[in-house]
Image 1 (cartoon, one colour):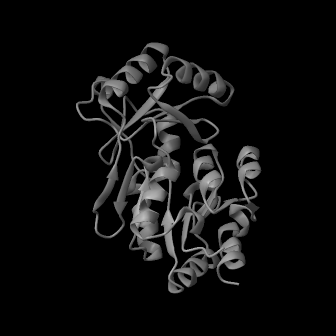
Image 2 (image 1 turned 60 degrees about the vertical axis):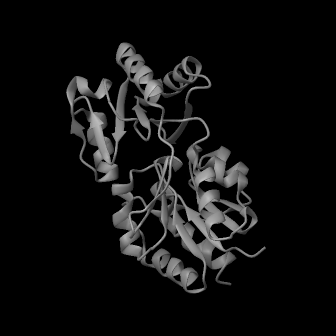
Length: 265
């Protein structure tokens, strides 16, 4: 099987535990690009949070952000694909989370809105490098549809909140997770694979010619559908079970090793 496009998740996959891309990984990506392979980043992160990493790698490709709700050129800034959460659904979700006392944050354009600074917003900023914008009650009354909403919980409350929101908004929202206490809330039909597939088609690349690498629940769609789905060794059991290959962990250059194994051999 010839691979013509590689899509990698960022956190806990492309990035090591220090949120860095190692020299070996960058070198493997550059060698793949020189061979004519398209390399994409596919992430739940905001575009503004991904772009510095894409720039550091010298990528000139569409970036799959917000779990596929926005595909935007890394250099051109061109919007290729946009599928935000319906405003009506977002308003219902925000009101529900307020009533239940759930922490929720909203992605308005490329801004991160929170009601107020909390330990959760501080945690997210530490991971993403993007400062949260406290907007008070305005959080619950956006006038523009957000790309997604994200709820954060204490670890012991995670499954309960997931099941609660999934039950209350069945058919109106897709619920997935990128970390053990991050609940990603998106418009139905939005996922990384649908966005990657659309980008691949624009290059004349078939799904069978795509390799996707990831670690978490929001990576399952691309791992299951790509020609070669790859899980890093630190991936969740369900992701490893769905993958055709399991590579080394994100702290052991797993992305570099599978690129070397599959496309640079």
